Amino acid sequence: MRPFSSTISLQEARRRLDAAVGPIARTERVRLEDAAGRVAAADVTSPIDVPPFARSAMDGYAVIAADTSAATRSNPVRLRLLDRIYTGQMSPLAIERGTCAEIATGAPLPTGADAVVMVEETAKSGDRDVDIFAGAAARQNVGRRGADISAGERVVSAGDLLLPSRVGAIAAIGCADVVVFARPRVAILSTGNEVVEPGQPLPPGHIYDVNRFTLGAIVSAHGGLPESHRSAKDTIEALLASLDACAQADLIVFSGGSSVGERDLVVDAIAARGEMIFHGIAVRPGKPTAFAIVRGTPFFGMPGNPTSCLSNAYILLVPFLRAIARLPPHAPRTIRVPLGRRIVSAANRHQFYTVRLRDGAAYPAFKGSGDITSLSQADGYIEIAADQSTVEDGAVVEVTLF
Ligand code: AMP
Ligand code: MG
Image (cartoon, rainbow, N blue to C red; front, side, top):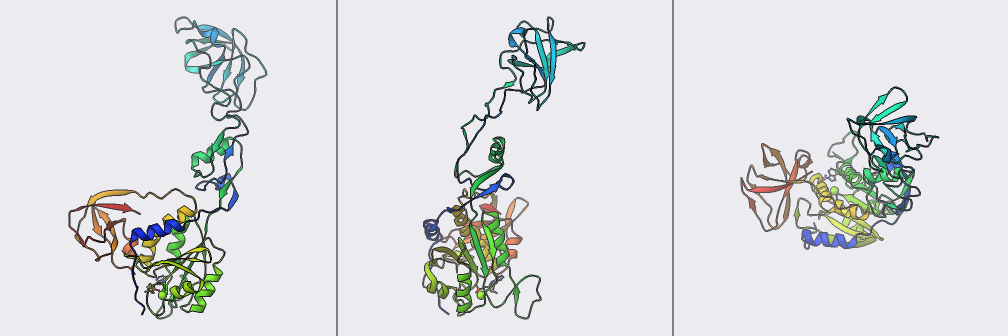
């Protein structure tokens, strides 16, 4: 056993992680249908006006506004009907004084017309005439050419998150693809002689791999591209070979072997290949977490215990990954509720304590760091500062929801 020489505070761990962020520079072109949630890598400028023509905003009649100024319900103005204009077609006729054309929402305004009277303010008189009951002002119910976007205008800036609305703006200007920052490639690997792939028979003394899947899920959810690697045995040779196999990744995440047992060799592997930035954080769960730079690539050594591993993935890995991916910080929802049962917290460690919500109160859900159900059966967690030892029954706590 090699005990931790010291641990650093959560705050200090966050500070060192922030300092190590290198936002991704690689870009790629994606089809618009795959663009949502990605980050634009270049400004997108419109080659066209949107709409590309003046169009009607209503179903009604395209008119010359001046013809209608005297119209009232009791004293309508009668106009000659020249044409019917549907969407997707240009009228070959020009509107002249005393005439109009029936027009659909979104159809191009015919030459000569400068306003649209909505159908509710009109009545057909036979097949050829229309009575107008209300005066229209010039440009009324008309969408000007370029009113939405004008040619040359920037619709998305480099660094913008492509929300559905921004995908829509790119679609509106006719671009079928967009240049985005590449998703960081995240190599994920479990260590431990006892770790077995789900779906395989379980030999005595073995357990199924949990961490590769929780880490993969969280990486996908926060802008990364998880790359699963075969789990590594607890030998220094196996770990070094695994580290080398992950060399192409933008971020490497191992789990297990980061504690202080004699088989916990991740620290030795890091010493051989890179520079340790910290090992051991004063948090619970998740104290034996390491962060290093391995030949220029950031490396997380997560605890093997599934709850410790996933808890620190939420708290440390997610912000780091999102910063590399150039995504805005994640802002989980929080609620304030009374605690349903007293909690005693670990001394001198910032605690992330999982809770379940029931009847408007939060109840402890934490079983142990090794139990995935500490998280899977919880709705969120509360934080208990390192210098606080108990949270009393009934105290109002802030729950961060998963
Ligand atoms: P370690 O951090 O390697 O000392 O492992 C701590 C505990 O977590 C041990 O009980 C391991 O068997 C368990 N463990 C390690 N890796 C995994 C994994 N990938 N999935 C589930 N449990 C694991
Ligand atoms: Mg292990």
